[in-house]
Image (cartoon, rainbow, N blue to C red; front, top):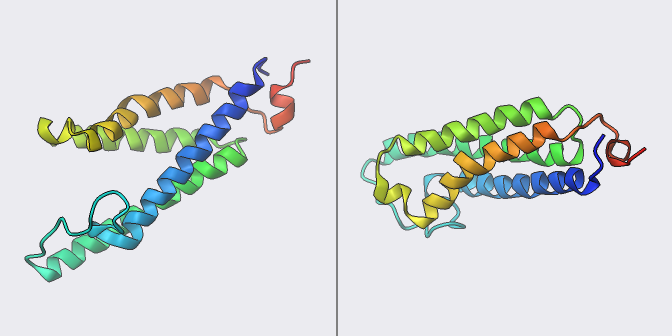
Length: 151
């Protein structure tokens, strides 16, 4: 039990916002493929030299977009029903951090320090680990009101 209900409800609100953002990113890539739907960048950034190879890679990227969409649904579900969500949120956060580490493995400082990438990288390598700590420090027993109301 915590004396600070705003911590519990604030965390649920943050999880909801993260979930919605991830869902939107998943839709952008899942339905738009490599070119995306254009919600983040213009869709004319790529020239296709091999249509068959592009179609195959585009299909893989669409899968990843769908996977990302599903991850967003899990964050939303955890915001609405936090009881029992801690282990799966932890797993998703570990995967997000691993994705951030994979970005760094490009070893291209020009790309990594670009503001459009840097903000995501900071969230992946700093923000999500902090979220994991917050999640693990916030008690949840299944009854939202009982969890946060002082005796």
